[in-house]
Length: 274
Ligand code: ATR
Image 1 (cartoon, rainbow, N blue to C red):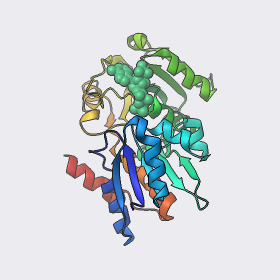
Image 2: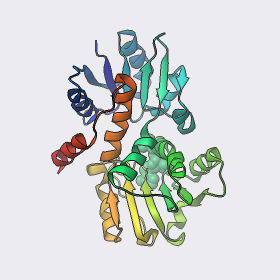
Image 3: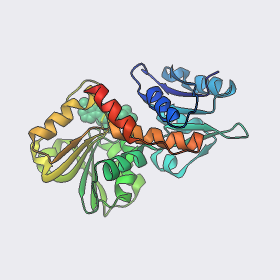
Image 4: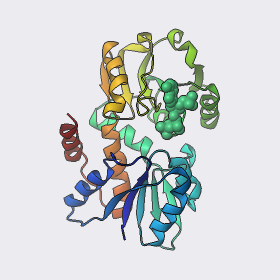
């Protein structure tokens, strides 16, 4: 039986198997890691089957992160504040622990790989779904001065701001008002528009003089947002490939007790995608 897996739907293009195999090779570990496609109504049963058959750990991606959080017996603080999980681990007694490494992974990508200090930045978070919930707290932890959350449906932006509960720093604006809410130092695209093949219509006025634009997705899904950022003369425009590798490294360490080197894996994937 597989010991490790990634669950998603669709899952065909997931880079997680390749990333975990590359990490395992750094330590001479033989890894059984596969991708499991489970539709939404089949997810919980597929997870139980996997762990009952000896599975030790699973990564969870779209659209299952909330369900993964819900079915766990135990939840880390990062998972609890995000309300979603991208890692499930079987504990010694057979119970399942949920963790969320997305926000920490994004932050390490920004601060260590890209050497960005977010302290004092005015940040704009586009989206308020699972991905946005996974990173919002970490942006505040990193010292952004303000976090403005804008979502197409205002109710979920309000819910996220309420959950954060820091009205001085974290507040919402309406999507319809994007053209009149000024400019930002950091703009994070946490919408799934790119994944769904849609382009956001964003005004250039959002992009401040030294702005950093960051898309949580990568590859074709990030192309439109990054092209917009470059047209708007953003100082930096990064996709989320580094975040993906960093979040995988956290999962790997949880499962194997060893910290893999992320840079060689990131560089190899970057070349592969070019
Ligand atoms: P994820 O886990 O990727 O965040 P999600 O929880 O389904 O997925 O959330 C998708 C996010 O992308 C939401 O914030 C969604 O906005 P709504 O809450 O209004 O649906 C946003 N989104 C998706 N497509 C979008 C589009 N074309 N324009 C603007 N926002 C979009």
